[in-house]
Image (cartoon, rainbow, N blue to C red; front, side, top):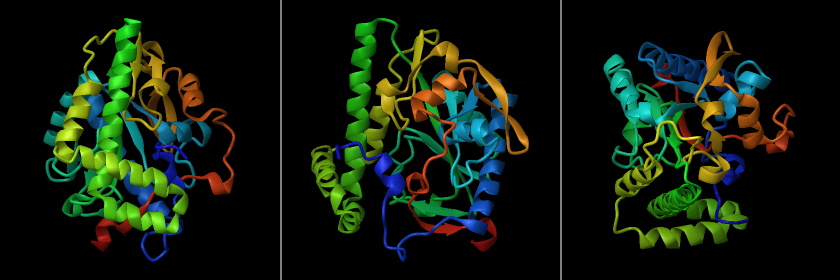
Length: 303
């Protein structure tokens, strides 16, 4: 395997005593809570004329299942970068006591995407070291960034984004090296990649995780042309170049059913989903279905 580890964690083996399997009644509860969180996010977007759309597995679920992918335990929403700061301000004002808002500016968070997390709940994952007091059940927010119309500048921006994202990933590996080395024992095939990223992360340890995340965020948002032909989601699973789309495909939206809601998906969701999943209407084999590493899970009534 290479140094791309995003997909690895979706299918990682762990000792069953070390993590929580989200299935059955727990999965139903999780999806219900995620739906409620997403509804609050989307209400703020609608009230403030902020463009959003369901992305990733949530967009796939809307098109293929008209709701959650049956085994899915998370939700993904995309917001235009030009609107993101306005969204976080409006959301914090609308729900000051209900949620934690995690962005690259949050100490110890260390991620370029954002996350809205429900207070009075716990969903502690691999990325939550240092956030034990704020690791609630959450919905991921991915930022749609402008790109340069000039091809040379666009490619240069892409290289910088790829490098920054890799730096941030490695810095997080170094921070959580004890956890990753425990995973290596149960998944020896990942050892070379993990140790390489830990070693590279050590080189950047003169910067805090927060500083690395903020630098990455600045690089992702370098282009200020809000009418550029192409946009990208560099914090997404396929990163800058493989998540580049025509603005016309993602900048406009249409409503599709998601459970009992009518929520936005990209106008050209077919082009988007083909980039993300290929033949997206085909169900994956059971062994290829994704799940998340969760070490602790408590619903509001259990906390």
